[in-house]
Length: 526
Image 1 (cartoon, rainbow, N blue to C red):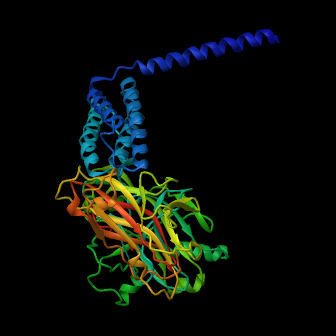
Image 2: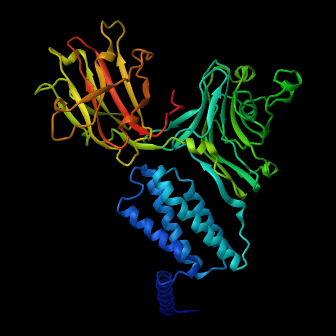
Image 3: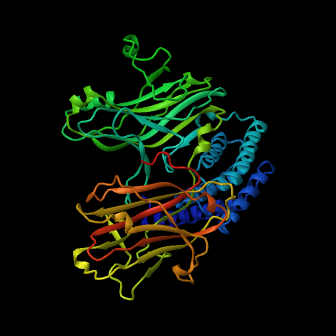
């Protein structure tokens, strides 16, 4: 038997040896010299990291895209070291191509994409050349050909429905902020809601797989048998090779045989779909669905159909149907041109959420020294916003003006011929039977010559129309004032002023949730 002292000595020696090996490995990784085939790519990455650290790129990108950008840039740096040490390693070559593909589809502003794309193209060419020189056949069947996560809205997908709510972008809130495309059918209403992909030219694609990350919500109280039918019949994945637009999606052979579809209607067929298990809010990332039989076609569309027809309504009764799609991804081998509709992707030029408890960097300005209606920060379910209100207990005895000013939005990087559109998401609440229009009490203005060191009255302001008279009273329903054209301000610096101006006897609330500037109209905003 080995004595305890001897055991301790052996363990100690092993620990020292392993630590020495780890140090040697770490040192060797840091000292790896990048091979000549990858030197240009390595220098490109260094330059990108330098530009990022100096805030020269991704300045107007959202925080999530910035995080994913630098995270995957670090991964790519590590991969170049692995490849320099093991240039014949097929797995590392494949992994490098996968990281490059991911970076290609990050939703970045146009200026940053223009900077990134030639670098990624050179990197792809360098890795492919290295594989050829080392006589390694890359497994490109898992190359990302297209991926979209609905972070910037449903475009380049399009939506339409037969009766009820259409697909639109949603967020789960501060706790789980991941965006998704949402299809919903409200209780008692039959509806077919379609989410249609852009056209994919698969002429030079030799294999194809589709993966969805999605969530279904079926409502409680259903039997296992009923739930199985609903999942099979209500959540459908369709594809077509001759769709050219429009709202005709006949896919049922019986409908065609009964002449309920036009003779020239595009042909849609169903593909198998892996649904989440359980009733509500269960998520699944599907196994890759092999759709290689579509390879070679030049006009392929996919459609996600939330099918709540009359028969389905009779089955589920007075319950909601809901479908959340977080990611749509095509992988395979070959070359897939970016869909033309990607050029219509809405890009955010500037956005602001009222998340600062003191509403900084906005400037509060009141017409009286002791205001009874000051702007303040509010919160609900973890979501912060700016709010102003006049209530019975406000005891307002004279008119007041409360301004909330965003002092400087820099649009100087845009050309004068660029389009700019403002979207404001806000909430308005008021009582029935008021003898005034609430819209006369809330205003939004824009200025070219305001600065933080002057009063708003010393600047020139133009009013922007945010009125929406369709808002139901007392509902607290969020409103969207979308597509306010600010294109004449492209290439300049602007200021925005939110004005709350109640009169004695008024009773209403104005809540500001967020605003953003985009380069295109938000056609998917309802």
